[in-house]
Length: 354
Image (cartoon, rainbow, N blue to C red; front, side, top):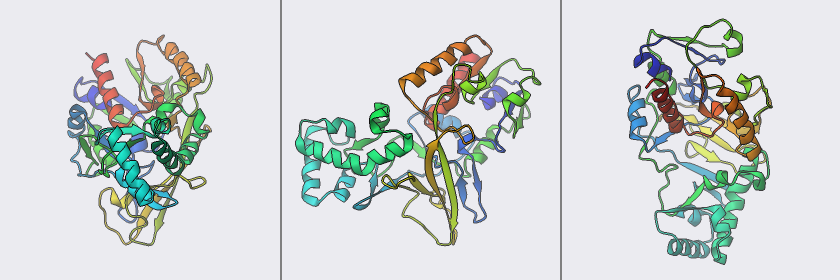
């Protein structure tokens, strides 16, 4: 948004961030081993939108990185998300063959189906296979991630993780995939390279709101915090990262390994794989979901009816201020992938500055 306002509309922008760096959760940095570390968890860019890909390509060249992941199960490491290779790795060969054939006979090859749908299928073999996949890969991971039983989690969360009826081990199926060659922070610095943009870090909105004059305010922080929790607090899930340097060349076979049945950890990320960096040591971050407590960071809006109703109250409050706009995961109280967040900003810019 700041880049468009400065470079296209030619207007001055003050961009503030309460953190000591730009970029929010996509911020990355080089550690002492020369490894680019994504501080707030892995962000592999993927999109089907040529417009969004071309826009970001103004500020970076891309690697040809296609994200893959493994999951730790009682049968060892298996491909994730689930596909036909996962079924071969997880099940005994006779059952795997029968399960896969029934899937392909009932649903077309190359398609996808959710575990939740399969659990209710009329075919007993499909139901049994789905139940094992659910127990091994989804159930405990989901409960850790959201801090509640699976029955309490919004069904769309489970539906977002499908079974792919193919043998492509790529995590995403989007047309455009990659990572900024020099990292996200370098890309974002290029976006802000305009004398019309002033950046102030370690700056909270509440500390300067009575000291700055503006024509338009775009707020990407939490909408309930902006209104001083007038109607109550919107709940979020947070994450804790334990980032370690280990004295070995590699810790795991690829960048991401999920740990669905670990008591507290959800995944481990080995960062040197992302930009194919070389070092005798390696840097790994271990992720632990936790409740947002007001001191840690907000990561995931919790999509439940009472929370959406509360957000709607804040949205109605925001309508009283015609020169203030809220957007992003926190402003919209909505789970966005990165490309969706970029698309939302570009659309909002077009609406406001048409």
